[in-house]
Length: 588
Image (tube, rainbow, N blue to C red):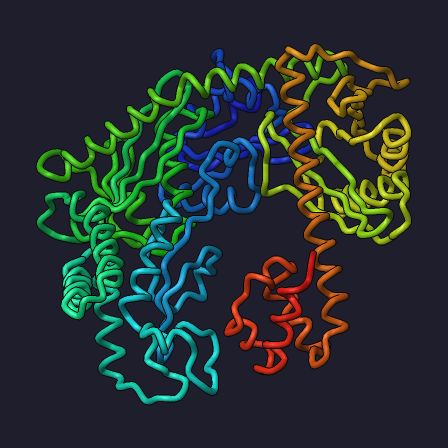
């Protein structure tokens, strides 16, 4: 296989791109020896995800680079550009939160997720895989340090001023030295120095206790306990006291478990962990994971301790911080700890993962067999929802290799309010696959619609009119609204599914996912529509104020939960009071 093409590949460093028969890039890799690496895919037997990748490869390309560092940087850019499914399918694709301390005259402290690296001018700390812990830290710091809480300066003091959590920057002059002191202490704490904050908590606790305000004293004791539990008990004996990440891994049976420990101020604060099937070898997989992780993050450590299979010189050159493999001392012990964590997580998870993987593979193989298809790697499912012909919407979910690919989910607000299932199906299928053609997006191997023969025929007509060749099937429910048969083939036939089979479980999961996704969107749209109608009839709320309220709150429930102070950020006080009263009496 590819014998002639492989004979032309040089023994040089570079990147390679695997493409399928539709010319879609499905995997990007790098190697210090392209010929050896590419040959390894086609000259020996493989299992698991590597086998599935090799089966799908139609042709490959490669780009020669001068150095391994160049190939690493090129690989990062190619993965960002093509988003190949075998690179991202089992990677950690979460957007971890950061804590941001703004560089404004009066700074604010907040949680942020989506970050434009090129525009960052503020102090960032993180990432924090534990979202709850990040929120708790911000909550504690905002209680102890009276920073600005409002997005805009108001004309009078807000509730935070009256409860002592703001210095009233809107109406009062506060010395720059006071602001600098608070900012300095917060930065020190977020870098791992907890002493200043714990001293402040103790002081406040004792003051409230001495004045016999025991409930307040108990609140600060609880905060103090939280800080102590999450930091003091996780000390790591490092003399240089710098921010360090530690990478450990365990690879076996074509799977790799990766753990990244975050050490700040000689304290183990958090970790990132993941386990996924390998497509390349363990060196390539671990390198890919590390480069992907640090290319996405904007607040990085001074050092990263990595296993000896990682080319530290290449990574140090590619990023703005050091990659080191310690061979002795405390840092070696911490690296061993990261390995132990990765190994334990591997052992804990593998039984569950293999069982689920086997079920998914069995289900997809059965689906291919029943529909006479060669591939069902990417499946797109559609569901429609309306309320007596109003607020018509449709949702699309995507399953790749039998698992939900949530970044690919799409929502469609239907242009017509006529209660017409066939018209809705025709519109949403056309909009989706015209966009696929126009933007050269990846085409699915199978489309599943929620409906009977009529809906399938409408979808097939649209697909045919666009010059596409994508099979369309439907799922039919029984009297108890449970998935009963698969409608497919040409002419359309009822294909029985064993309710105890892995295929039935997978199809049911898919159907539930698309139904819940669509219903959730429908409720949101309906709530927005109702809220918009309500706001049109409130005296003192014009188009500008209405749009601000809709943008901020989105739903009636969110608006009901808003405090009077929150509403006064948009509305004058008298209108906010009357509107708040109206909302309390309104039955949604």
